[in-house]
Image 1: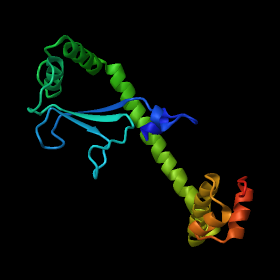
Image 2 (image 1 turned 180 degrees about the vertical axis):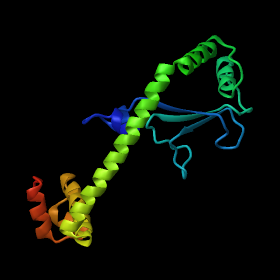
Image 3 (image 1 turned 135 degrees about the vertical axis):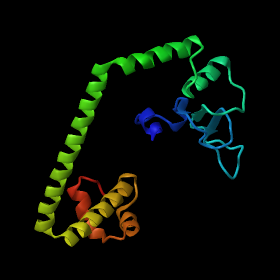
Image 4 (image 1 turned 120 degrees about the vertical axis):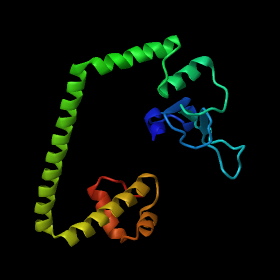
Amino acid sequence: MIDMDLLRKGVYYDDLRQTYIIFICTFDLFGMDERIYTFRNQCMEQPELELGDGTTKIFLNAKGLKGRVDEDLEDFLQYVDGKPARSRFTQEMAQEVESVKRQDEMRREFVTLYMEYQKQRREGAAEGFERGRREGREEGIAEGRTEGRMIGTMRTALKFMNAGTPLKTAAKIADVPEEELRDFAKRNGVSIL
């Protein structure tokens, strides 16, 4: 869904910028011993047909031996694999890594943040559980599930209607009575075609 973040309303799909997603792996994910695996969205039935969305996914394999890479990338891959940094870039990276490791305060903040996250998660789960029990007792579990499914179905039908599908067709697709869909649409401010 990265594409959704790059496109604003009214912008064409063709206007997507080039996007590179890079995975740095300390193991060979595909088992073919390549240093770099590059993927683009391509049609399986017509290999010459690319989707053209500008997305390239690159997997860097620190264990790979096949394929040519420049000296800097080779040094980086060796550094990721645990070998000493040789190039200026990887030496600077190694210094940053060591600096972060030495910063006790940062480590403590991370632990504190993680503990707070766990606490919030537990409290949220407990609150959700209690809320669910309360609502379950009031409405009945079976009735709530049925109603929830119906609301979900109605919302899906509304999405069809928002996209220009006539009420009669949307009701047929969703397998709901037209009159119920009409009432639901009115309550939710959806104009009826």
